[in-house]
Image (cartoon, rainbow, N blue to C red; front, side, top):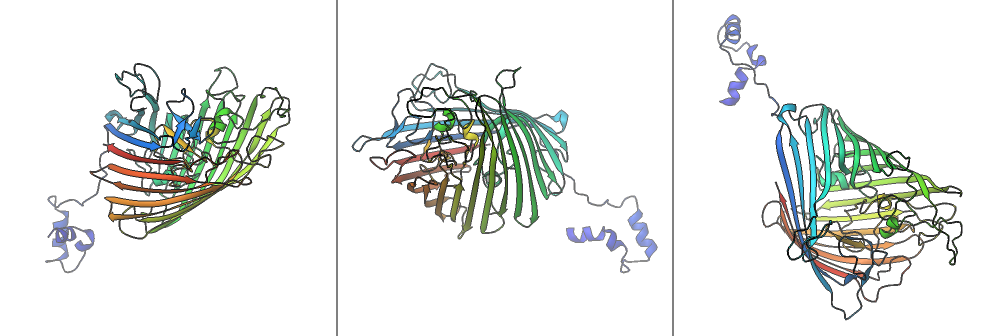
Length: 540
């Protein structure tokens, strides 16, 4: 009956000669003031008010990786065995055990007065190791007896404004919309707005977070045109040192993505970083000649005029102009339009490093990454995956310290900020940085540049859901080698995860590194390993 009712009220049916009576009678019925109006779909009212998302992570872990310094107790990141003071314990030494916890809180408020066209967003975080510190001040600590630690960390604080398009936070579907974000926000290396994107959108497009994936303050314009084109234009101040001095680090980013066919997307990307900080921004310096870059497995170029072993010359001030040009292609990257998905990206990193009283140092490096996935059975975890990453090597030396007339590797955000590049798709726990880490994230190859030595890295995994979307078992591994210094080891890993209630994950994971040898170091006396359980709960 409802279908028949709609047909009887349609304009097409009103013209049929089979209507009872004459045409005049039919017209009289349809023109009558009592006739029902056409059914016109209307958009739902825009969402307004306060929206909250919380994430709780708890991770007890046991490992034979420890710290050789009593002063390194809070956040530990970077190359395993590098300047972060991490070591692999000798055989016969008891492994270490620690439990970490983190709570992230994400707030959005859309005032009714602006009809959902503006959003005030903020994100805060508290994390610590159980028993680490109390009655003090500082981030990444505060879980000791008595608590009372001042440790709230501000991650995001921004305003977001819908410039055109329908009101609300989502894009206009096949229409057009544009949003301007101003303030402290998440900055990735692709075209997608992190407020509305899925994880696969951020990690399997653009630079795959291999170059940039952290917070920065600035302006970003995200747009959608006719549902086929996406674009991003952003400008960010990474470091503002002297307010009246030209000694800042700034970043400009432009990205365009086109969807020419079903499940296919093609992206083009251009970014430019202007560094006039003299290498002194941040607590550990900044740029490809800084201690910060070395800590996280990036290059630390020795640009002194005298680089001999007996030289006492201080490192000179350096500035830089760096550009990244690249493209990416993807077919069904989220596996939501079929069983098979693949992505690929390639980038050229070019620029110059300016050294006081010396010749400029040209920069010219390349990076390429490809990944393929196939869902072979029921369940989100029943996927076989393979990925390969290549970065060029610096001809000045495999350890990245040679300096020389040019630098042939790549530069990432890790040379300017802590954990500023966030490669997550590799599936490894120790060979490459574990994306599930809370405060202790170390890896043999922490940065894609591999300390300037270049990288050939492969990884893969095979997962299966015995209970579809409820229980997943995965086995995987990876291998890494530099461009000129041989292999850095192989990883074998396994994990099992379950979802005891909606938006929760309970897991057990473990990994071992075979023949691990970080750049410039001998192989460890015993194989590094780690086992941990994890619990994550997303609260909405």
